Image 1 (cartoon, rainbow, N blue to C red):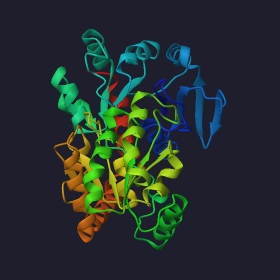
Image 2 (cartoon, rainbow, N blue to C red):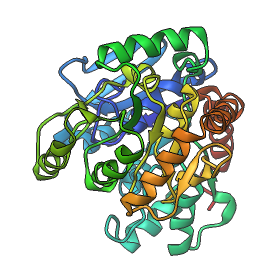
Image 3 (cartoon, helix red, strand yellow):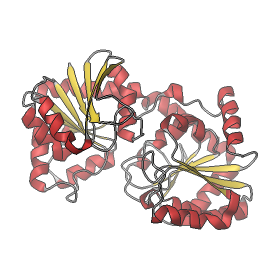
Image 4 (tube, rainbow, N blue to C red):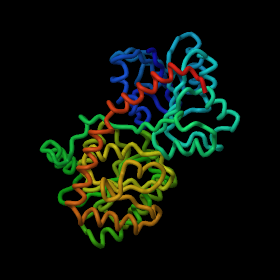
Length: 383
């Protein structure tokens, strides 16, 4: 089949500036091009050419200012069996009008059918123009079905994944060696490392972790909270919230470390420095991909019962799930539990890694998507 991927207007592809969608595309594309022709549309970036053919994948890039219209114009002059639109239902009908013979697959990575993001009439038209929808979690799937009369079978949950070869479990000899090297680079020795990786935004909740540290340190005086991330993807500028985080960190001195933005290729190694990874999401998280990464690295996970997070992290089986997500004491207790019950935490981490190998590799994601593409091509928007 001839398949087109249409990325969002936020970040370029490949993931030179990160982004969950772009990282997933990077991971699945090598498997897709083994049997199909793949063209990827994305915005331009100074580090990337406007057009290129790399590893059998055709990349076409347009300026952000005219991106959607440029893509639509190109679709009128190209023939695709399936067009996969990433996370932009508001653009589906524009692309469908330009490529009427193509089947549309729409993947949802956030609550994009919220009335705050798309008008009812436009949403209904997008659903009509789409052959099959996929979502990154059952939570996102249900946000659509609660608002619109969409058949159960029209929306498929396709969880994301990782490249297992990039994530070496911490209990392996290579993992142990890398752990020691990274901890040395961070100026860490025998400290208990609590790791946060994510954008520095209120919705991600690092401020709650900072407020939890007083209680954590009263029980674990050698604990260190490492906060890895920038205000936005690949950006380390400060806003009022980032300034507030640094203000909250002052009383704890060297027990708080900010690393700024960490490129995606460094994340597998950074994870190995941790004794426990914490996702402190305060919003209805669709399902943060960093969960898959921590699971693959074999790091014990604490997450919040928000959005889709708890769909892949099972409480006290593959991690620790916090219901009282806005309460710093709840995080302090969860961190204490993981640090004290080391053998139990390691057992959770090993089960997590096993789940990744069984279900959450990019090869699994690509296989599930290819089945969707084949079905969509046959349907040709019968709904």
